[in-house]
Amino acid sequence: MRIDHDLVAAAAECSPGEPPASLSGREIEAWISNLSSQEKDALLQRLISGDDPHLLAELRQRTILEMHSKEMPTKGPRRTAGEIISRAETLANARKKKEAEQRARERARRQREQAERRKQYLESLAGKESHLWAKIDKLIATRQPKQYDEAVSLLRDLLDLSDMQNTSSDFSRTERLRTSW
Image (cartoon, rainbow, N blue to C red; front, top):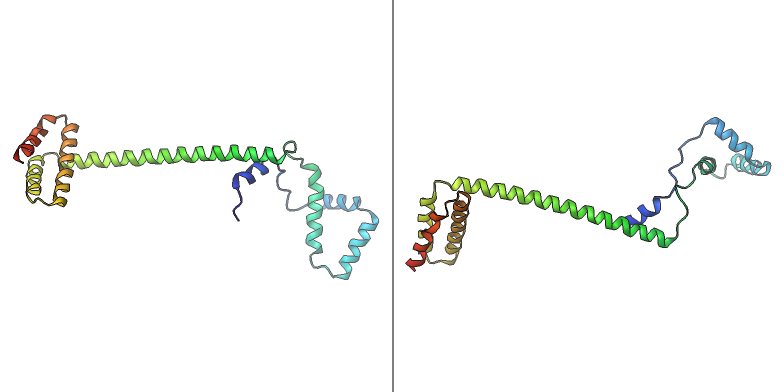
């Protein structure tokens, strides 16, 4: 229905709570005693004629609303439409900020997980450096662009591994690649 949920929430903030779904016998008796005799006669006539199948539900609802509207004042003073709209904007901004914070936390969590997976992957490469260098040489020798991309990816992995192990001097083997071309 495209209802602005923030506007509804702002409007509902000062609304009275839900009236109870039922009344006690004493409350019903008090409500009936407050009706004028003319109104009682009209209600009895409608009841006896049986023309209104919803009369019972209507009377129950009316009784509940009338009895509890006196007991349940609004939570605050009446507000203008502008005040409600302003409050809705405040609620929307707070909701958007909360959602942005949640997205940032989720993004940070995914980045931590990705970094942990990357670390585990690099640790799995430890000790296989000479094999990887040979694979890189072989991939470059094919002179195919797709193979070059794979070689570059492996070179990044080896560089990250050497940084992680603080052995960047071992990565100087790339000089060999430069001089071979």
